Image (cartoon, rainbow, N blue to C red; front, top):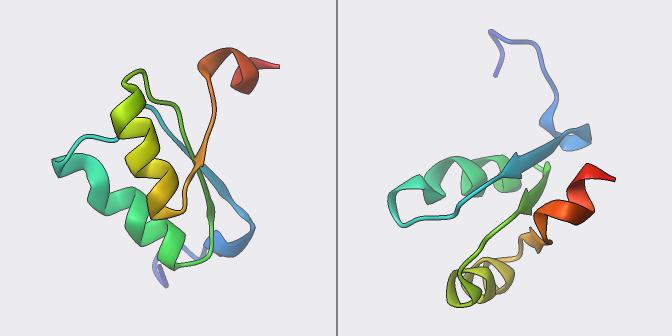
Length: 64
């Protein structure tokens, strides 16, 4: 993060699909203080993302 000179605490990260192998980047960003928003089609995976502490919302709500 020192090379990019960005502060993630004030950033929001939108993640489209929280699959098993793709979970590392949102978890890392959340750990660094950024707000992670997950849009998930599968209700079970959406519940898992919610239990991990991510904000879960439908895609239509993000576009507004």
